[in-house]
Amino acid sequence: MTSIRLPLLGAVLVFAAFDAIPAAAQVVQPVRIRRQFGVADEQPTPPVDQATADRKALEAAGLKADDPAGLLGYVRLRTLSDSDLSRIQSVIKRLGADDFEERLKAATEAEQFGPAAVGPLRAAAAQSEADPEVAYRASECLRRMEKVPHSAVMAAVVRALGKSKPADTAKVLLGFLPLSDTNGVADEIRTTLVAVAARDGRAEPALVDALADASPIRRAAAGVALIEGNPSEERIRIKDAYPKVLAAATTEVDPETKFQMLYAILTVAHDKNAVGQLIDLLPTLPRGRLWQAEDFLIQFAGKDAPKAIFGKTKESLAKAKDAWKGWWEKAAGATDLEKFTYTPRVTGKTVIVMTDFRYGNVGTVMELGPDMKERWKIPGLPGAMDAQFLPDGTIAIAEQNSARVTIRDTAGRILGTRSLNGNNRVYGNPQQIQILPDGNMLVVCRNLIVEFKKDKDEQVMTYIRANHDINAAKRLPNGETIVLFQNGPNHCGFLDDKGKDIPNKTLKVGMPFYQSQIAVTAPDRVLITEMNQIAEYDLKDGKLVWSKAVSQPRSVQRLPNGNTLYADAQGNRLIEVTPDGEEVWSFQPTNGLQVFRGYRR
Image (spheres, one colour):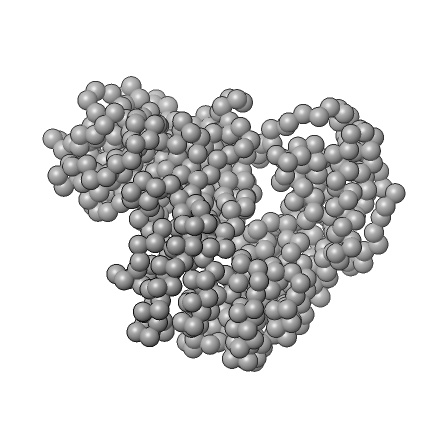
């Protein structure tokens, strides 16, 4: 039996004994099946502030926020050498062995690694499509090992270190960064690295050393921290580190790492010498980073921005790069990046709502990161129809089969609900969600529209219409609500700010799709997904101003670059097209799920 000797932390660890497989594990049937992973906790978790949640997570792990040595020791305990990581991964691979007894043996060995195995096991558990057997058994190992979610503990540890800033914080966190349990933990580490990037105005040596690390993840985090750290009114915040970051960015060969460094240099240090390097990088960037680069360049160039299309082919991207190079050759001497204020409109992330009609309309909400890899996923949702982020980073999900909207974190835990039953005996089957500027939530159902008060399960406006006549709705900038009706002549009506019908005010439209959606593109313009097209209407005169032929589109979004993102029900794809209708990006699931809606954020 393989084992690794790891230093023990003085604190009490939240793991079960590893000397034998629990009895419950012995009854697992030796049959390979594709299991449906759902969200076990269907009851809301009482909301608590972050400080209280962190304190409870640390206490559950036997840790204290005012014990920096213990916190650093916890991170060290979970940090693996390359050789140890390789050994753990080889054991995890055996979780999918053909022999059932071998799988049980591998599970025992994986659990004996203790806390160090949590990260690799979690990564394996997320790969249910690649190998469902390995994913299932990795999940079972985690279930038996963890008494509290270690991602929550690690995030709390990292935040505590960011406040106390003990020596070696940067070095220890950099060591663990590539092994992070979740993207959320990795983001917390990056935030803390920014907080500890300088001491007395000088660069943290561990971060400077990490600029030459073998891991691109560490190089990127170090470069960004040394640019963003030591906040001040000055462009160059850590002066002794700036030349080193510039040199590292110039010689960096990994496109993702190079982009992160250049993006920080451009948006924080406002150094226009990095513009040319960013343009040269365009054809090699992952699509999400390309969207961010495009957004920066379009805003910086203003009315002089070239009409460059970031298409799907290498040739298209090369042409786009050449167009931007041509612009920069003319504009470099006449532009002042120091006086330019950039307002990011995209993060490079895409939220996708999918449904599995094979298993009773079971929904999944996931997010693609800028690298087009899955950042998080919430499966097992009862009829997920829509999902929208709230300002605090939680996500509201319309769950049709449960007649409710749930507020969840990206781990899937329910933090709150908005009930849609009991509206004058009208059953609410939520279809769409809109987060309003004042924080209130507008929920659109087939028989009613409900506005909930910010952060409360309290209705402030209710509009009822029988016979499933409500197809879609959207609150407009002027306070009115446009409603697409399903029955009768093809038209939209309008509600006033009290939720009452506005007499004699309508908009003639095409035949609605029963899963239509409305998006606002300007104060007086809306996009509507109809049965056979996406149509943009001018609300002042009712005229059609743009359209795209699509069979049964389910969702639509006008992007900051002028392109349009929509979900194609017939083709089962999420697609981005230019104003001329040229397809420049698409996503299609490979796991049998159906794309329902998708949004860029």
